[in-house]
Each structure stands twice: as C-alpha cells, then as structure tokens.
Image (cartoon, rainbow, N blue to C red; front, side, top):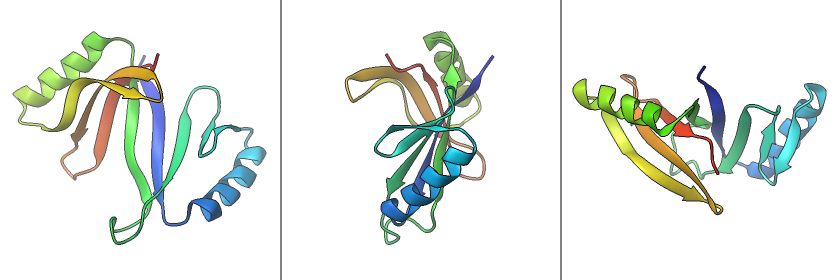
Length: 121
C-alpha cells in the first residue's frame, strides 16, 4: 500500500506557525520530531519559512508518497515519461541529513508538486 510519507508546508513566519502547530498537535496527539517537524508515527509534516517575495502564498510545497521500493519510483518515472509528464527531479538518490531516499519529483496537470520516494535510510 502507498501512503503519504510527508507534507512540507511553506510558511511566512516559522516561529508563529510552529507555535500554532505545536499547540494543535498536542490536541491531536502528534509528536514534535525535530525543530520544524511533527509526526503521528506514520506521516510527517515539516514547516519551512519562505519569504513571500519568493512564493505567491503559503501552503504545502509538495506531497510525498511513500514507495515500497525503488522499482515503484522507477515505474512512476516511466509512467511520467511515457505520458509527457513534467518531471522536476529524478529518479535520483537524494541525501538529506546523512539519510538517503530514492525519489522522483513532478508536477500534476495543475502544477502542484508531487513526490514519490522510498523510506529514508
């Protein structure tokens, strides 16, 4: 089964957003996992400050679906290539904070960014 791995929100004021979400997530039993992220044990939400001169509005930058294997990521890339999909990056090994995931990022028909990635290890 494919699930949502994480959601990344771009916000205008990180401190304000973190204060709001820390309180909200206490109510819904999500845990703080690092300085800007929270999790319910399965899905993660991260908050990244971006100046509004760079972005048009705040909101999710992308939704990342968790792939069970590298072959799933490759199949998504093949589907996109054969359907003239708008691939932004990948498939590629992406290293972040000493962990690696195999990923492909792309846009849907309305321009929303989606990602399919393996579990970071």
